Image (cartoon, rainbow, N blue to C red):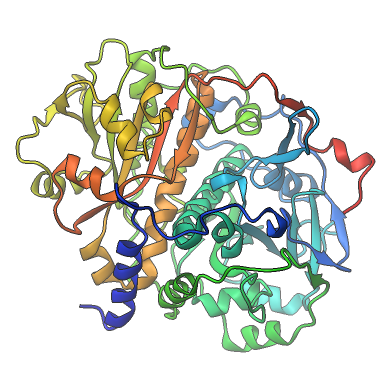
Length: 554
């Protein structure tokens, strides 16, 4: 058992406590307290703002070109920094029901469209003079950077000594209150799904620019929170640090850097002493406390300042298999992404397109998509296939990493067929049970029709008990990051296939385990998803993402 055994027990207790069951749901508010709905945007009053350039969806590489070879690296400057955030964390549209209030949608998906994830930029002089070296908070409502700290040039140079040329840093944090306002105790799970969504968003936006994106997992949470200027925040509306990301142009130097990033204690102290600009806004007048969230957040804090045995998989050549047939640009696909609210229950998907989507979820076939996580894959997918042409309906498994197969065979129902589906040996896709599975999919996903009416739905199962016991409690949220990253890929793949998808955070955890025959904590269901042809709500009116800037002021 790991030395932090008491914190591991907190993690296991939280995970069990927040499972939905057929006879009860995890603890939540039980109603929508609209008077205290959190403000949809965090901003820093009084902080100088730099308006960023807006993207042009018709420009840039085709979506399918992202899966062939790395694109030529763009220079790091004001325009490309603007594009990175425009196609990762910005607004994508506004929606309105006639006679009602409008609400915004964003490029990055989020549970309940609540968006607990905040993003920061830490940069040197690469984008000067438009963006001076320092710390910035990204403000999506205005597509702007808020200057939080203008740091001494020498401090950045000390950090940059360990980074590739032109590299800079992006930080992510979560405001748990945004999710717990609606979802109660289960909100911690959803926040970390959204961290994974954001990692996927930055990965795709970076790839369009010829940039590599990778999580830095060699720093403690305290060190990162100081770098992001959020270490002194407190209370239920405080941001909790998630991760730091290195972004660098796809050069040979960038591709060969493997040493873990460390920060001199003197630099951390100097950053902590720098004056921060701007005052944080208040999100709600009153709050409902959920102590278990603060408890699990504290128990999963990463204290160690080394790589913590975060093994990175060997780089292997990308083998794209069936490329997307979509002729749209990557920016178009990214910007048009929406979460489906209902599926038509009729439309079918071609087998080759289905196999292509699954192929891009296998780790070794798409290094670009998964290299942002510096550890081996922990998640494989169990699929409820409903309407894929020339493929029998039933329960399937996609073994995303070769090491998972023996573990899954050991844990799952011994009566499963394990019948390999791809004659070209392209996928590790196995048929487990040939039968109609709409009923099971619907029941598992809290009786929601959308899980049965799509082309297919799936549950993401992660190696769980042994991994957390080995790595430590800090690894728990990282399992959700991996599921969120997979989810973002599915969102974009559905758009490229002319369909829609949606993440499903409401599911009966142990009912899924029972269907699979899993009776212990070796594997746990962490996220569900569905893909299909959407039913659009014709009442909704749509408006461009930044139409409000001409007439509104925050």
